[in-house]
Length: 397
Image 1 (cartoon, one colour):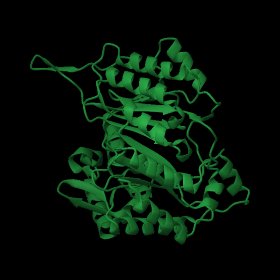
Image 2: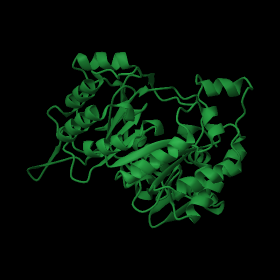
Image 3: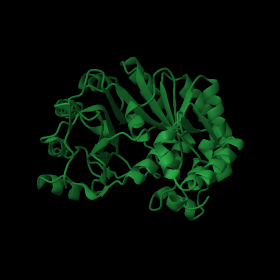
Image 4: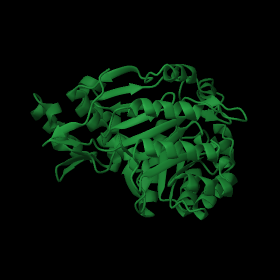
């Protein structure tokens, strides 16, 4: 497949904007009951050639091209299982390959049980500037339902150690809709997270994915999750609690204070380009959307053969890019520029204008300063709003 090259303007090469760089590390010490990401049970030693394969994949993309990146995100899996020396080599080589500027954001996901004072120091030395800790809940009985390895005490200690060790950019994940979760449970989770030294908080509704142990437990009736309307009320409670405590609800599932927004994830939501390395990682590059094999073996085989391991790459049409801009842009409180998505409504402008006014009247959507954005209440009903705006893609609401 032809790869894009820097364009020429006024006789000078114009470099494309910096990418977001994602690395998927699929190894986990134990497999959580709810997780549907591609992951593998790790042995005592992670495969030693994994790092080399990631770097070889990076070199395949960078060969003869002016690719730059200013954010790095290591996700998984449990990337914090990587030995610090290997992590430092991986980050150092990627930073040279993609010309990281000073101040580049480098994030790693970490499970609480992997966080120690020594590792925190080594992670900082390796070049990480931001840590995202998978707390999920501080309630011990709920952690057991999720099959989490870490205890609530370990989660709290991990956040303290990371902060004391110099991580000023610190995030935690929490879940809403865990089996047995009560409003009181959620309030306690939110209070503890808000009191912790965090500048970012991700709050996700628990999804049941077919094939996961938790899905089987719920499907068989052995376990119950809160009803959808109960989860919605819990989520609204979280919004009101956190915004009253000074957090900005800047994206459907994410809150920040200070300058805590995740710069890497903003690239996805603002329609910027990103490059994914590792099995199951996705890329949006040069107008092409493509994913890597959801298999360590197939991914490795392609790289060893000197091939970029993209499966079924899709050349994005202008309409598809505009649709994606609307879909992902509406996840953000800032919204999406109207001028970027108005061409989607050619031929039905009058009907869309009537629809927009109706959505504004219901308090789900707002138009201001040339931006189209959902309200916090609209976040809850975003799927219905998008179905109404893009019926050809989603079907009628």
